[in-house]
Length: 200
Image (cartoon, rainbow, N blue to C red; front, top):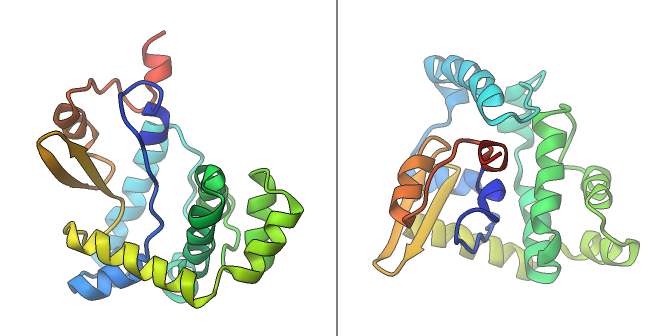
């Protein structure tokens, strides 16, 4: 939704790749997959969010394998490299990786998967070759750790974690159900999940 509001609200949206596993470990938080009642609710809630936000979301065939075993650290390192070197591609590559995982039930951990997502986002072959050769260097790993630590300093215990900076300071919001309150904090109007169609 925040991507849809970039042209509606007076905001400068910055996506920050973070390592969710590190956030969960540092805060002692447990994901829905480890708590049966929470996991059952999550899948039902994903269905509702799919309809509300009008996104092509589908529950993966093996959520435990995808979330708990494969994880997302390699894709987050890949996105971190992009943020450091080709930030103009960050939003679209993030979207393509999300589509692979949460819409088409495809892998996001293997180099071939990262390459496919980047190409779909318009990455040039030369830049892509450099990215695939460099995204697991110590420099990139440190940057991901630093950004994750920054999120923890803002109080993050899960994702999505949104930090709003205003003239009065900064405020943090957890989850995709806080947009009306975020709008109030920013002095903007929440027009629903798709503001452009709401204004027609």
